[in-house]
Figure 1 (cartoon, rainbow, N blue to C red):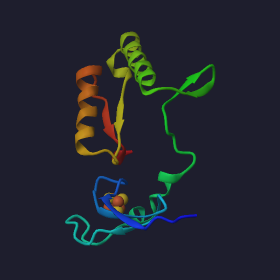
Figure 2 (cartoon, rainbow, N blue to C red; figure 1 turned 120 degrees about the vertical axis):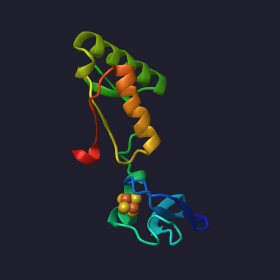
Figure 3 (cartoon, rainbow, N blue to C red; figure 1 turned 90 degrees about the horizontal axis):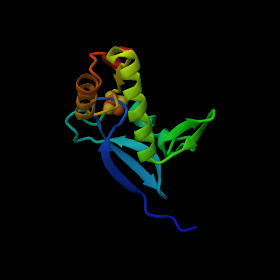
Figure 4 (cartoon, rainbow, N blue to C red; figure 1 turned 60 degrees about the vertical axis):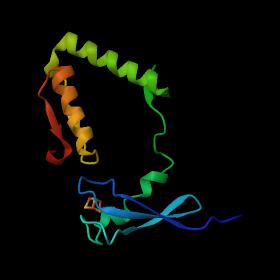
Length: 138
Ligand code: SF4
């Protein structure tokens, strides 16, 4: 088996909104560990335990790789177009039948600020509700 040369990929830790600079150590196309970016202004060479060990989900065989929609009691893999059409239709129906406040939106600390902004805008401007919260408060 031919082994590729190990490499380090500079990125941002995806685990919280802190945004620490992190190197992923890659060997044969797989992440084998992480190291802090010593020059990053946020973490200055430090990482918490999640930054050091929280990468294993990336290669987990149970990770979802396509949208799933429940059909006749079982989850079925579908295209993004079908999944998004399904979600849009369901949200429209819920709003029409039960009113805007039947909907609540919870965002994630793993999302960037811009995504969280768009999400709350969607809740308020499209769904018509102020039921917006964030996982940091749960
Ligand atoms: S290393 Fe820890 S503090 Fe830094 S971004 Fe990742 S989870 Fe947040």
